[in-house]
Length: 194
Image (cartoon, rainbow, N blue to C red; front, side, top):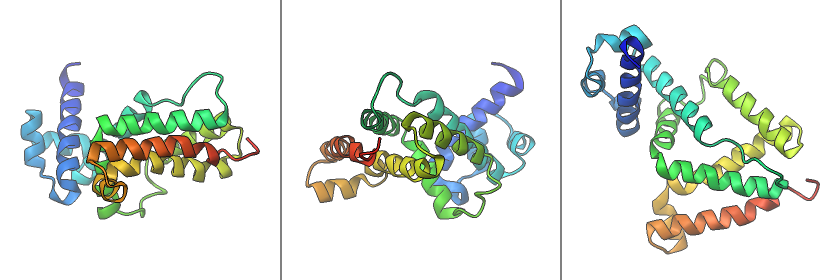
């Protein structure tokens, strides 16, 4: 990758680190540009403004998640599918904590007000449809189930201190215990009809 694509990739990577650390309000375009090794004006040329870059960074981070954490394949029962997916999502977040931080900053600073115009809406519609197909559910039923499953996988990474306090274990042991519980009990979410 060279030229404009390399510059844009460098900005997205630098922006991901900066936004994950400081949020939208605290991030500085001059730091992003310096870390990317480019002129700050490139940010405005590619993304319009800092908020536009924040949205591009989020979309890029979700593309990464989609590429790394596909739905489990094979001849799995719905409970096995859910358990494997919870573990895969948890493993991803353990290795890439910046996505959860970006989503937290988005929730704190922007809320859900841009939901209908957000370019990620199509991504989630497709994700719900595929999830519904894997579990042989109606998308209306699959959507809250997917949200809950992602929550089970993500929550121990969002508030590891709470997991340690409640489970009365060291941080790494509490996350492992929380995920063990989630993987075992998420099977019940599949319901008797599946």
